[in-house]
Amino acid sequence: MTGPLTGAFADDADRRLADTDHLLSTAYPGDDGSRQPVHTVYLPADRYTVSTVHEWGSAALRAADSAGGVDRLATLIGVSDAVAEPTVHKLTHEPIEDLRLDFEDGYGNRGDDTEDADAAAAARAVHAATRTDAAPPFVGIRFKCFEAATRRRALRTLEIFLLTLADAGEIPTGLVLTLPKVSTPTQVAVMVEACETMETEMGLHPGRLTFEVQMETAPMILGADGRSPIPEMIHRSNGRISGLHYGTYDYSDSLQIAARYQSMEHPAADHAKAVMQVAAAGTGVRLSDGSTNILPVGDAAQREAAWTLHARLVRRSLERGFYQGWDLHPAQLPTRYLATYAFYQDAFADAATRLRNYTQRAKSNVLDEPATARALARFVHRGVTSGALDEHTVAAATELATAQLFDLAYPKRLPG
Image (cartoon, rainbow, N blue to C red; front, side, top):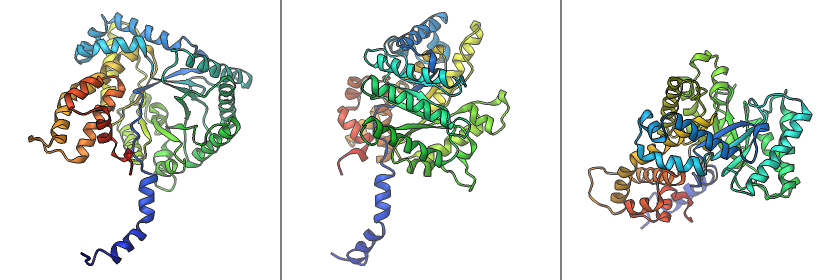
């Protein structure tokens, strides 16, 4: 049957919307479902050694012991002690998921000769760690920004690090590069070209080098033309931007917020992150919240207050769709994992029931739509990849195989 909206009209609609179809399929591919680290640890580049990850794990466990143990710390921050055992296991076997060797604020300006040597040494240490079990799943460097005063130094450090890595052996699978203090899409375009140039120099497959962008300046949220430049920045990167990371203190300072009130939960921070979230939605670019500089050190009261704050901020970020954040001290690792694991375990039983009811078309007092089912499946899948949920437990509770859960969570990744 052919009516007024079929036949010629539909053919014309196909022609007129061809560009839209192409845009949606290429610029908004959706999340690919790969593992996203729950945090990024920042460390001055010259302090990194092959034993760093193990040392941080041991220091994290000692810090928790000072509070009476991980189970006591769980009680202190208001989560079930059921997450204590997996947290101890995590701190023992993989305490850091993502490590950034810092040549920017955490490193400072030490002169060209010193930074040249440290960039090469960092690359050799990363290579040595990846040949053992001492490397985290994700590791890389944050070089200086592309503003005029530090641009050439940034490019030089990036070049030395990458060429030294290439000379030492294979580029790590989880290599991450971080471009800080971005203010315009043109700075990102230069970084894209830098990646292309280094890929050619190193004989890498096109697209092998990707990078994160740190959102630390007001012009990156609202540009001089009155628009947010984030979408342009993402779509001009040719798929090379892997993440947007909120920089708590630089961004707060750019808005002249008094130091005492600079925080991940300041209204200005929430506004910036909301803009980031909308701009990145559907693009496959991941989001990370920032850090708190209130560290669990000092006397018992100071440590307990800092742990309680950190755990609350981790949970707050997760509830708002920011599944990653920064950690600055080993003593923050226990509460990072306790709060993260509790976030997933607390809601798992309900999510599993709703998924099972949805896929089996069972009667329920909750009428979940396909979009909600996707959200439930993504939540559970993230719980598995974060280590909070066991794959076999998930399969039994949802009655979904791992592949079925993945397909439900990330339908755009299905053929066609």
